[in-house]
Amino acid sequence: MNNDASLGFGHFIAQSDVVGKTLLVILVLMSVASWSIIFIKGIVLQLSKRRSTRFLDFFWNATSLDAVAHEIATHGARDPFSHLASHAMHAQAHHARYGAAKLEEAGSSGEFVTRTIKKVLDEETTRLENGLTVLATVGATAPFVGLFGTVWGVYHALVAIGMSGSGTLDKVAGPVGEALIMTGVGLAVAIPAVVAYNWLTRANRVILSRLDAFAYEIHTFVAMGQTLAGAGASTGTGSAGSPTASAAKPVAISAARA
Image (tube, rainbow, N blue to C red):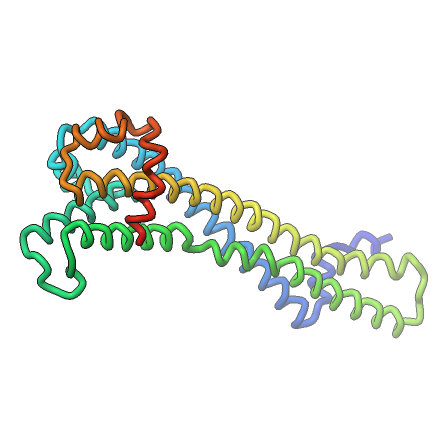
């Protein structure tokens, strides 16, 4: 009776060799890494959404790009949209003042702004996708790490039982059942990582889609020299939440990424 009471995960770990304990440490490290990324990315994502909403509300209600530039200079570019707007306006002002002084500034002002917008979009894509590789790796490999731990534990349990000469069910079930816990640990590590990966991938895709659309707007205002009122009238844009020239956006966005 006392022997049955001593069975469990703690007993399994105590009886494990270096391989079994190493596999458990790997699973623990995977879990810590994935949960750290989940919490950090989740907090950053929520803050970015709030700041982006506030900036877009200000942008579409601003009287001029100078007011937008002053707002960014005062509070800083703390979200993807203000970051994109800041770099686009700075690129236009820099090219207008100094011209094509270097090879990276070659071409017209519109072409230089287009390359700057593309560079910022690539930077934001890289930043948003940072850490997702770890979640994908944990989600794909943790179950197999746990399964390997189970196989290793079952093997040693059966060897110990064979050496003891007692092969009854009550002697086999305990050690084998303990070894199966490693599979459960592997799944417990993998499932949150997979769910978080899908959630963050979807959220990033939405943000990048909105950023692509905003890239069209800022390219129109800055590179083409249109005033805010004139561009808004030509595209039918009135606010941050309204659909903006749905037919023209894809063409302009692809031009900005060319």
